[in-house]
Length: 478
Image 1 (tube, rainbow, N blue to C red):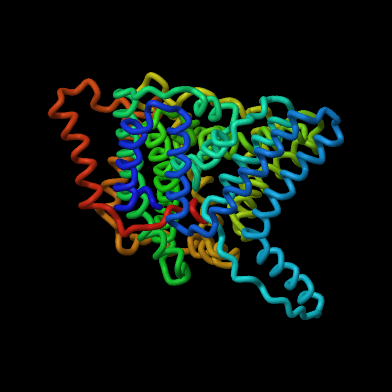
Image 2 (cartoon, helix red, strand yellow):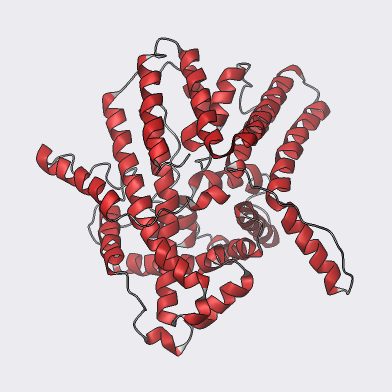
């Protein structure tokens, strides 16, 4: 079920009313309602894959219970590796089977040996990378005794399947989320209003910003050889803003929806395009995945400790893993490697934690150095996104080659004037709200009620009047 669909617009109020007015007297009943709602939400796409969510949930719950009964370290390791192997095995089969098969066949073809092995027509389950990592992190934390295992199966099912963040995150940790399912929730009007405000801004980012940017970006990436360099640059910039509006918009809707039910999800985006270097960007972009790889891969490998070779190795491992997590295509791996190359100079010169505060904090305008750093970082990120968006490595290089041509100095084709106007307004509002949890968290709160309502109704009207052609959320494919 899509957040930007009529189905969800009907589904959400029904669940909300049942949750607060029918099951509110019993915590376990509320949790059970969330499970039913979550499975309906996921099954709306394809009910056949509900067994994968349930199997992964049951496996890691059972592993957690096993940890509570076993003290022998070797037996605990067997349980842990069972969870890792089965979870990543399912993920590997559905997401990477054909990728490895095609490359295996290609390697033999290179040496003159033709293999006749058929690839499989595999449907990738929506959100498998997200709920697999969320469930797996629970098993890892219990194994390391960072978390007490739960013995309440109903609560654990509710935690893994919680519908606002089930299919595209944020990837929650059990230490943060599980206790909220054990605590009685009281309806909080101001919290619910804040949730609705964040949902509204998320919808604006998705429908007005991302979907309109997608139309121009898709046109450029479909056949880059037939467009001018200036148009391709604009297309790359459009995709850069599309993926931000799309994914951070989804996260805003997820966080806002969770708040309607009394839950606080971890923040997933923190205005990443206002970053002054690539390290700051990665602290602010897809935070739940970045911190997952940091805690469960980078730090266990040694992190930034050790000699220079180990630092370089660990950096490339985490970025290549992040790229491969996104999809079974060499374009994602190159995207990850490119970001590792961006990151390494900062790490090796110990400048990767130089910018921990908000840019231009307490000021309306950034300093010249801050602005230059922001523009350079944005340009580097936008360039890397070309590989992320391209359907193949060849297409990416065609796109980049055509950018560096004499036509780069021409006027872009079919300038999307309305979209550019909305982008200017969007970036301005995001800049003003960069110290808040989301851009319009504080905007208009001190205004008189008529002006405040005018702001919200203007956003609502723009959703219907200026929304682009409906596009699937980008991260549903991961």
